[in-house]
Length: 89
Image (cartoon, rainbow, N blue to C red; front, top):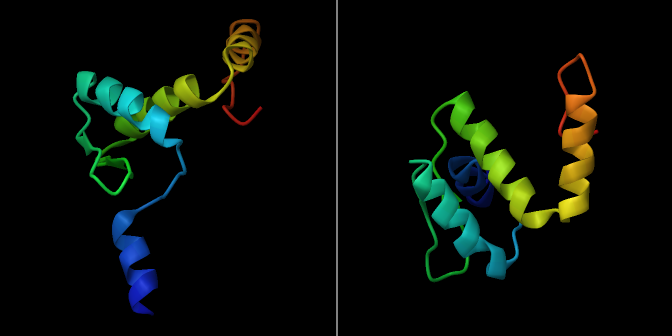
């Protein structure tokens, strides 16, 4: 495995988030007691140790990055459904 590939594997999953949104996401994740930092390089680093934390990170990132109407539509579909709603739908 190349050094760059090994470094990427150590970092986990990488998601691009606008620099302007990183502080909002960082603050909310800290409120949820999910370890995260915003280093000077402009990245947002999150330490996810369990499935619930992963779901919370996904929820916070969606809330901050997606248009409000997209989130409203998704919630309305979930509330009207009798099955689990996928975030990708």
